View (tube, rainbow, N blue to C red):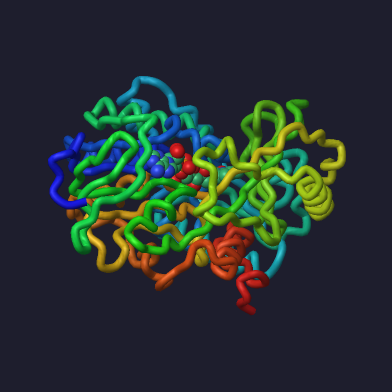
Length: 423
Ligand SMILES: Cc1cc2nc3c(=O)[nH]c(=O)nc-3n(C[C@H](O)[C@H](O)[C@H](O)COP(=O)(O)OP(=O)(O)OC[C@H]3O[C@@H](n4cnc5c(N)ncnc54)[C@H](O)[C@@H]3O)c2cc1C
C-alpha cells in the first residue's frame, strides 16, 4: 500500500493477538506511558493456547533471564489484583522437582544456580518430605529433590483477561472480531496493518499471534522460527487423589508433571516426539483444530503411565476423565523469540513461548514495552533474538522436527538429545 488516505484508525502500537502475551504487552505498554495502544483479536480474548494451558508457574529454568521473566509475572499479578480489586486466583502451592538420572541432576543444578542468581529460594528435600507433601509420590529412587515454595499455578485465561482489563482501564483499545490480513511496509519499515475492516496505521506492530505468528511474519517475507507443537495433559476424575493445594510435581527424567485440580490431578506427559503442524495450514481458531488421536493418545498414556508407576505407585487406580490438547510454539533451542527480525523496523516479534507463555507473560510484556519505548530491557535479549537461527522455513519437516525435540526436552530445560540429534 502507498499513501494512505484510507487509514481507518491509527495507533502508536498495534498488538496482533489478544492472548496472555498480547494482553500483557498492552498492559506493560500502558505502564510505560504509551497512550495510544490498540489490540486486535480476531476471536475472543484468551481463547487460543492461553485457554488450554495447564497454568504452571515455575521459576526453575535453565536460563536466569526466564526465571526473571516469571518473577515479573508474579509481581504483575499483585499489581493487577490491586488495580482491578479482585483476586487473580494464583495458587502458591510450591513445586517439587526430582531428578532420577545423572543428566537430570546436572540439569537441575543449572536450574538451582539460576534460582539463586534471581534470589528465588529452593530447598533440598528428601523422599519422605516429598511424600508428606504428596502422599501418592514415591521419590526413593530420585538422586536429587528440591522444593521451590514460590511456584504455583494459575488459570491462564483468567490471567490473560486480567491483563486485558487492566490495559483497558489504563487506556488501551481492544477490538475483538477484527482480523489482521496483511502488513503495510515502506522499504524495511512496517508502518501499518491491513485488517478485514480496513488499514490501520501504526508506528510499531507486535506479532503476538501465538501459533498463527508465522502467518503474520510471512507477510514481510520473514520465516518465523518456531513450530506449532502439540501439548497435552490429562485430568483425573475429582475423586480426591489430588488432595487440593499440594505442590506441583516436575519429573523431568520421566517427561511428566502433575498438579492438583479440583480433587483430581492434572497429569502432563511430554511425548518422545511431539507432533508439529504446518503453521500456514492452521484453522483460524484453536477450537477448530483437530489435535486428538483417540487410539494413539491412549497408547501414549498407557505407555507413560507404566514409566510413572515407580514414582506414583497408585497410578493404576486413577480414573482419567479429561484429555486437553492445544498448540504451543516451540523454537529449536527452547528459548523465546523477542525483538525485531534483523533489518526490519517497526515490527516486534513476541512469541515462541515454548510452553511457558503463561508463566513468563509478565516478562514478555515488560520486555516488549521496554523495546518499543527505547528503554534498556532488564533481561539479556541476546538468547531471544528472533533472527538467531538464520533463514528459516517454518513449514519444513526438518525444521519442525528440531522444534519437536525442544518440546520433548522441555522439563529438562533443553532440547532432547536423542531427537535433537545431539549426542
Ligand atoms: C496443553 C497446553 C498446556 C500448557 N501449559 C502451560 C503451563 O503449564 N504453563 C505455561 O506457562 N504455559 C503453558 N502452555 C503454553 C501457553 O498456553 C502459551 O505459551 C501461551 O498461552 C501463549 O500465549 P499467546 O498469547 O502467545 O497465544 P494465544 O493464547 O494462542 O493467543 C494468540 C491470539 O492471536 C489471535 N490471532 C491469531 N492470528 C490473528 C490475526 N490474523 N488477527 C487477529 N488475531 C489473531 C488468536 O485468535 C489468539 O487469540 C501450555 C499450552 C498448551 C497448549
